[in-house]
Amino acid sequence: MGSQTILANLPRARQVMERRGLDGLVAELPINVYYLSGYWGMLMSAERFDAAFLAVLPRREDLPAVLVMPTMELRRLASEGGTWMPEIVAYSSPLDDETEGLQSDGKPYDGWPVRPGAELTERERAWMAIVRRHRDRVAANARGALVRALRLAGLDSGRLGTDDLRIEGWARAGGLGGVSCAVDANVFNEIRRVKTPAELELLRAAAHVNEASLRAAADALVEGASWEEVERSYFVAMAERGGQGSYFICGAGGLPAGRVRRGEPMMLDALGTYRHYHGDFGRCAVVGEPPREMRTRHAALLAGWEAIQPLLRPGPRYSEIAGTAVESIRKAGFPEFVYATPHGVGLEHTDDPKPPGRLPGAQWDTVLEPGMVLNVDLPFTEIGWGSVHIEDTVHITADGFETLTSPDFGILCRP
Image 1: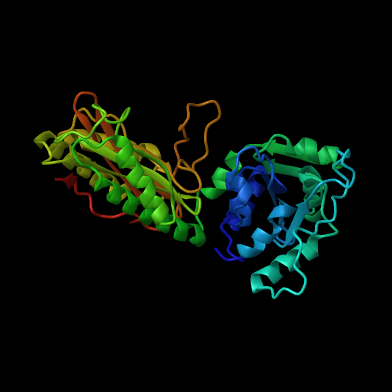
Image 2: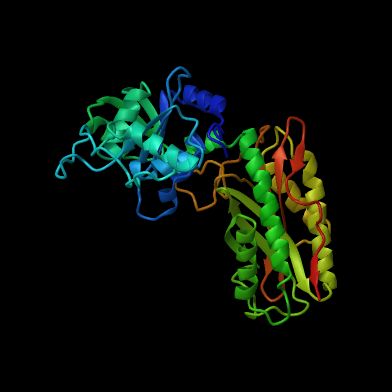
């Protein structure tokens, strides 16, 4: 993604802020900082670097958005193409090591030494330039940088939406007594529900990479193979294609016998990311000839998929899709089928707003909108028999849908 690439749906973000009575947004969770700024920091992928990055987006278009980041990542930011956000507030160590105040300056940041007389590359010159720009105006820490960022964004007072309950306290401790916060990560999910063209490009790539990796891993399905061997094939295939595997499953609890058995129905369900956007894909598989009951159940899943296609357009709810799928699959000769699960997909596996206090994976009964990207899960496991599954990713358009995954629904049969 280039320096001016904007992942965030800015018009929708401002509409959501207007509707919720918010003057701006402050993101702390890495996926939300990435969404707002377009930059994924190295420390975002590391544990225990809490609040290393923050992103501030004011509702007013004439006020600047601001990215807060550690000085040590300035060179990487230049290498990655920067951020579309017009302001950056970097932070280093305090001038006085005992200082904990949010208003203190950081130590002037020079970065690594430069060899005298060396012929520098264009990238190295960009490193020097960005460090030079920020050398004498760094904050002491992330909290102090947040206060500076809020002032720059014209948000030294007002109501902010945030995904971190500490933001209000940090702002007030820094002298911004007029700031109040609504802590609700769902505000970001609500905005992210409708994807931008830049996000759709990444989601298409993620769907392709993930599906290709599942199909490559299916080639490792040989009689007697352990699931660890098959799973490893998926993770390797994802890495070879520039992605990162999250999980690769074959039903409830793994393989029933711990090894691949000839003629045993298997579901393959792969979840992975490409540039932090998720691909999610599922198919049926078997070593040898598919048993007759597997073919019957697979055909019923296909009937369910056909039945929900008229509902994949703006207007219907998730519950309508799920209900139609279950009813159609049962009528098509699979009365044991239990449930279907439509869900948004994007920077999170389930990219929808989450009802507080509900079980993991719970979501509101969402109405489909143009620009949404969702998966429809049709999984089934029967202990003592095996499992089957179909799962695909679709983009809801103005008058229907487009499928981001393959139209090849055939059972993956391996000799």
